[in-house]
Length: 120
Image (cartoon, rainbow, N blue to C red; front, top):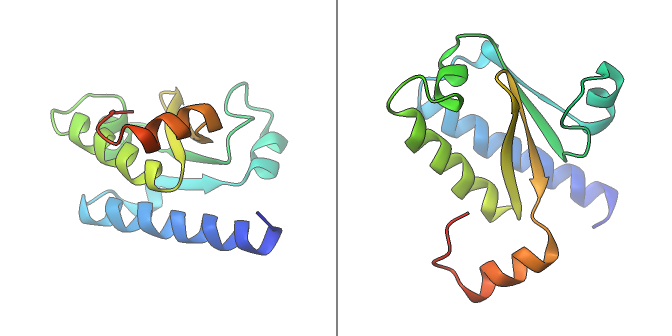
């Protein structure tokens, strides 16, 4: 994937995730996306191999959803995984306040394509 296509891809992905968060009344000022270079500059211990990082404010609605503190969190998490799978990514929580979007390894992607009922 060339650099301009990758930038468009990430921008589109962030817009789709942000629109979903808006539908779920997640406060936009309590989450932020980081590109890999900016994230590495922060020298955080986890998420350094992610394509994109998502941070959330402590005890914001997104924080509560991602950490399972509220009942609807499970459904939010499943929807995030469904959205990310469309972009050949998966989301993994690194700590309570941030997580990474990672590429699905090619061998797993092939299995998903051959078995569309498989849940990530």
